[in-house]
Image 1 (cartoon, rainbow, N blue to C red):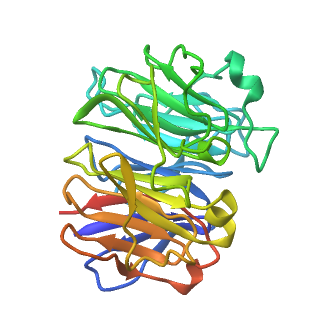
Image 2 (cartoon, rainbow, N blue to C red; image 1 turned 60 degrees about the vertical axis):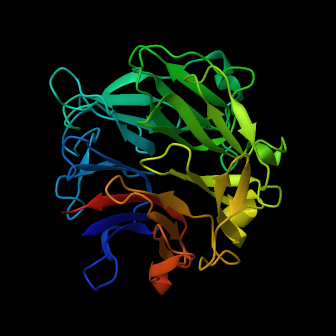
Length: 348
């Protein structure tokens, strides 16, 4: 059975596709930003939330507890905590440590990087990301600050951070030091992914095309040293905020696109495209593209060729041989919320 962990600005929901019932709220009122699943133990899931810190589930999203909390009411500051409550991204390193555990990485607002080597029991501040370009980093809705939007890990041990907005930075020593952005690297990355079958390759869904036409999507074949941009077919929807890659084919790429940031996040009017050769082709039949805020896209290794899209108008799925997207669930109380995160788990 497939379980979806759904993040909206109104909270976290759990939805079992074969249960015959609708989504169940498990963390109501929180603003989830990202989910991360432990490769060693799939039932262990982390959730970064804005203003409420980091949360962990050890039962595939049934129950959750906060972790990395700075202090209790009757206590002083706690060692091993995440100081910022604004956690904006969480990832789990796909390569295990010597202990067999997988390090948990957390990005915050303002941009800082934390690490846990004990499954989230304690955290250490790894870097304040004090690079020369930091003076120009700025998130448009809150121009005086910025945050870690994405963390991606490559097979050679590299770590790549997308700062919103202002930089794509990288580390090759487990986050101890970072190299500043390169002149031709993306500035406004919204989703950054890697693929196990494409070593050192990076994929990025961007907002750069709003100011630089043609820069909707970017790829790096060499761990972020060089970048190639594309936007053919996305001229009417150049602003990307969703990205998913086929688990078994690093060339099969889908993106969520919109005309502008306003359409994507407030007004509505967003669609889904897939890449064919050197162009992007709309593939959104059955998806409410005229009314939807920009969706979050996802796949799962045990469901190759099946695609998922989370919208404020529901959860949609496209089967490998289907010609259209199908709605799995569409709660009316989601309409005023913004989709933020989606994780797919296979319970058996």
